[in-house]
Image (cartoon, rainbow, N blue to C red; front, side, top):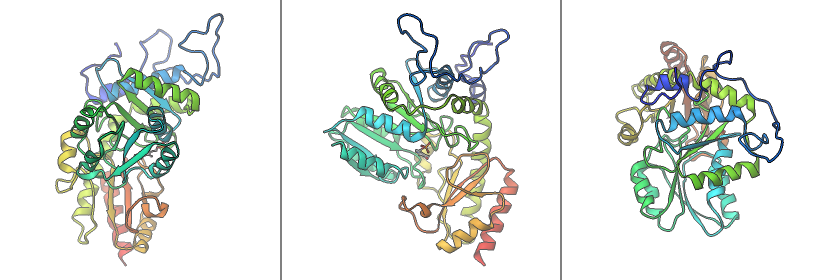
Length: 379
Ligand SMILES: *Cc1c(COP(=O)(O)O)cnc(C)c1O
């Protein structure tokens, strides 16, 4: 058995991703290496010198993520980080300097406005446009980096990555895609032409709600060298235990994603067919504004469904009435969660807007719970 699984299916690649070649009496996935420093007599040569720069547990995980983000492609590098935000900041702040221009979505992850303030404080010009309808296309002249988040969190709008990449390329502008919501099994930004695929591994990638993690995968060696330098100087590194847990979770990625995404489709259909108009959004629904582009560039549509209840009070009653779904933030875990997104104040969403993350429960149980909570909260 070798571990280069080119051409293999997603499940096959997921269970073997990043595993070292088999060695007699060694485990399949070596345990976490807890080391602040490594034996290093003489000249300090790599790969393993000091724990902020490199760690063998990261190496296995980085290979695994690379095999999922860019299967069969040479020259692609992955770097893991302490969180999704550490990875996002590493790309933005390593690629941009005073006088540069960056284009960001105005409906992306809720921390992006804070990032925007920091970029501007460093003398970087920030332009923003919504994700839907490829509105960022009109802002690319003179930009150094285009940041895309598709599908967007929490609005679930999508943009046409290939089209935006083509326009950016023509202007010498780099493109980064936040691939958190899709996971590498749902979308492969590098194959769509992007320079970086960046994601929070905290969500569906690891899927158990017990790890914070981020990563950057990129094919441009010099750009990735700056990202690596940034990780070294900021030190936003994952602990070996987190990296190992994440790698362990990747083995079940395809099973989790297939199960959760299939149930998300059923949840979206149930909400669409509900007698009240709930403004459901899910890229997998044929009538959804995101569906056409999503079908062209995504291989799976994700586990997040959003919809809007008429009032904040109704939304709170709905969340209280759910029995199988935890009221919690984040998404992508095997246990379903939902929240009234407006409670954070960071997203431009109505007060009754619910972000629902579909877990791995039996679909009929989850649908029954959803229906009883919609009914109970209407009274
Ligand atoms: C959660 C999230 C992030 C941030 O990830 P952390 O691991 O929480 O730092 C970034 N982008 C998107 C789309 C997210 O959902």
